[in-house]
Image 1 (cartoon, one colour):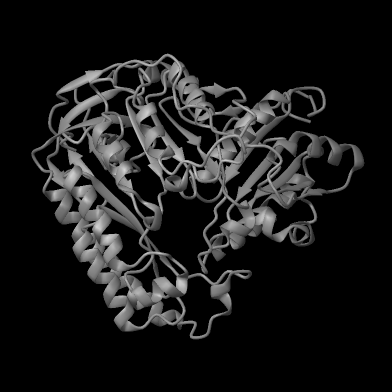
Image 2: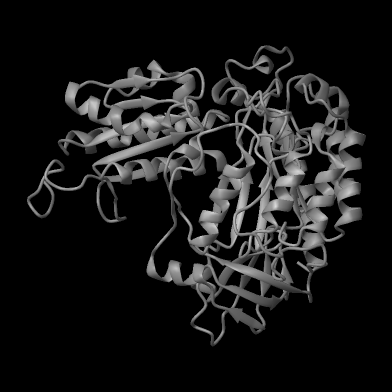
Length: 511
């Protein structure tokens, strides 16, 4: 019974979705929320214990397993004391572990995989009716996730998938076996979803794919030719959507990164001067063992081309330390790339042995102490590089999309936070302008720098109120309906196109 004397069968059931992992998982969680709300569930408030907790899991790192099972253990006594409460586990770890989840946590009601997130409401009802756990894992995608509704987390920024799955065979990565082969979404469907978000006030969209620059090669419609230029065309088409101020994308693969994408980025005003380009290792020998089909000089050549076209571009990366067999000489090559590439920031990882990957079976697995020492050196170098790059921006003017919850110390420092067009995080003082809201646009001058953020403690030079800010103030986030059912390639184009907005991201951005 709840505080009003009702049980969960007499009122709308409340839900909470907890997400572990990458942007793909975050976006899948928006789909799960949309599905549940369509099925009559309501989002739980922070103060209540939900009737349903859904875990959308990651399997890339070992600590993801530990975190999930630890949290499930914490929920067991809560569920025991709350009749009718349900727990569901989905995502990559569920796809990998399958029956193991129920064996380790028999109080879980539903286990579903990456290919059938649309089955969740039915599985929950079946588990209630049958009074036993329901496990349903499909081996291939039954429908593109865009055919499902989505309740968005943000009023001002949205994720839009352009593909699912991955055709690469990196020896350290378990994603292809869990997400399946790459399937590319129809450009018209992508652009229709972007338009739907913009119609509800969203200012910034991030295009998602495991390998966005292979987009167009994996269309499954036999009537349509494969198109290696499709991603560059998609970026240009997004640039013609009126009201869309910022376009980002993640992640490309260096082996397939082409000059037409660089040209589209540089020539499309609302495509942001930001590039996330995973390096993984600077050693050609290790890259070969990782089955990464590019080499150090190829990677650095791409960075040079991007900076030639967009001198102010912020370039970030992923780096793995301690891959099996990595020598001190191999690690020195990685440090050399960090010095030469001058990354704005880097997501750095200590190699994690994942069962089911080829790298897990390789000899010469490195001792933890060796990996930790190298990792510490890499972090120290990258923080130095990041600080120097950020210090160069002191005195420059930047435009910020004000963000919610981006500064942990904001309450104590009387600051707010926002993202510059190049993706950098900036903490600023709103001063006497008490009407600045997440989703609004402000311009500020940078006054100080740290490795991971910038400070703007001067006056706010301009403040533009937006529809996104209005929506955030009302507590309303977009909900997008199912978009498209096909996976073929119609002509590139966007509904209701117009000339690019002057406020979009451009190569002339000072951020």
